[in-house]
Length: 103
Image (cartoon, rainbow, N blue to C red):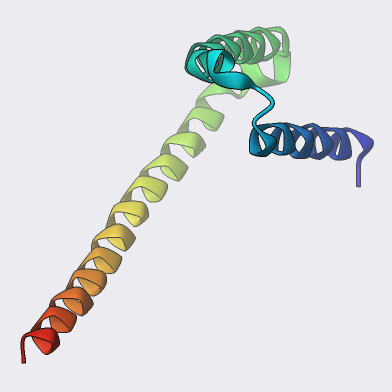
C-alpha cells in the first residue's frame, strides 16, 4: 500500500473519531456544510488546473469525455433500475407484513 493512501485513511479515521466523540462543538457543526462546499470548490479548481497543465489529458480530451459519458449513463441507468427493483421488493414485503397483522 502506498504511504499516501495510509495517510488519507489515517486522517479519515481521526476525523471520524473526533466527530464521534463530539470534539467539534455545535459552532463548528453548524458551519460544516459551508466548509465542505469551499473545500470541494477548491479541490475542483485544483483538479481543473492540473488537467489543463497536462498535455496528455488535453490531447485525449474527447476520448476521455466519451468514456466518462458512457460510464455516467450506465451508472445512472443501473442505479435507477436497482433502486426501483429494491423499492418494489421492500414495499411488497411491508404491505404483506401489514396484511398479516390485520388478521
